[in-house]
Image (tube, rainbow over all chains, first blue to last red; front, side, top):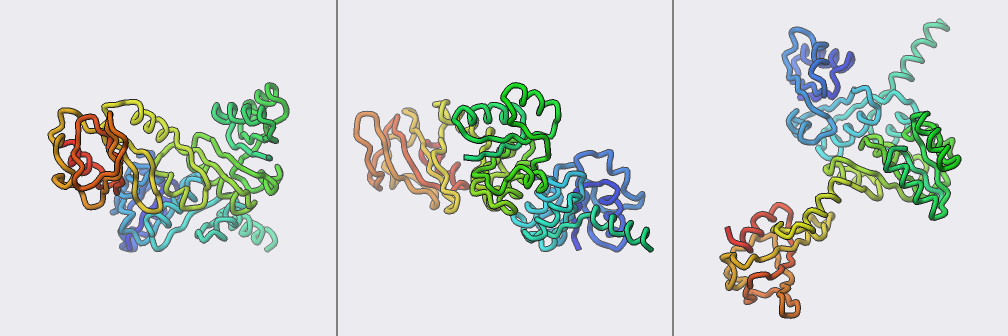
Length: 132
Length: 220
């Protein structure tokens, strides 16, 4: 599969490493080249400096032929907007984004965007740990 | 009307000032506490501190009864999300977003934001209108048809002067509509219309054929 990941933070870089190790064709996009230090040393994919809200950068990252687009930058709004560009302008078959704010996550889920809220999931895990 | 404005920068500040003068009920949402305080000191209690993209904030300020939400922060993505949340969660009838990247216009329109205002595009349009040497001026875009109405001026020295329309190699996706000459009333362009120096041609064209149309009318 051809996968474009926007945001080379801890999650983005780790995901890129995992997918690359599984033999997928991975491109990671970040506005800051320094964040590519988080990619594993044996990463065989492409790391590209660029803004995922900019259609020219997305094209350079190969979004037109991508099977999957993942938006995991620090900004909820950036993620959700990039996800909608991927979904509605470039018709990427599978689009997933991270939204920290549970309320926004709920809303975008109803608007047909696959959005994951780590806040909700992690709070739930903690609750289960505490209550046993 | 109850109007909510997101973003207390310069655009937001002067916008609410004007809207208040017109007698509207206006509320400005701004994240930064000190900006909020300054605005409240100057304009009365009109600024609410909060994140205008958060559904909780918008619920608190009664977005459900708002007639309009205008997002004018400096970030396209924040304006986009604020409008989407207002539209889809609170059914605000009209949402307006300021955009910086002109490319975003298409996306915003496609996803239900009613009006987009792009300062970049506005300045560009003014340049095109004001600079007479600009060979082709955009007058109107028919977005859903993928067509635009443009104006092309024929310079007196163009090698197409004295030629009839049928002799020009016009692109297929372009149609000449009107010819406006200096000393004659405007007339419809026909195959036999002869071009004269100083003529203004109003044409309908697909954006991708623009360059070809310009060359056909003004010579190489």
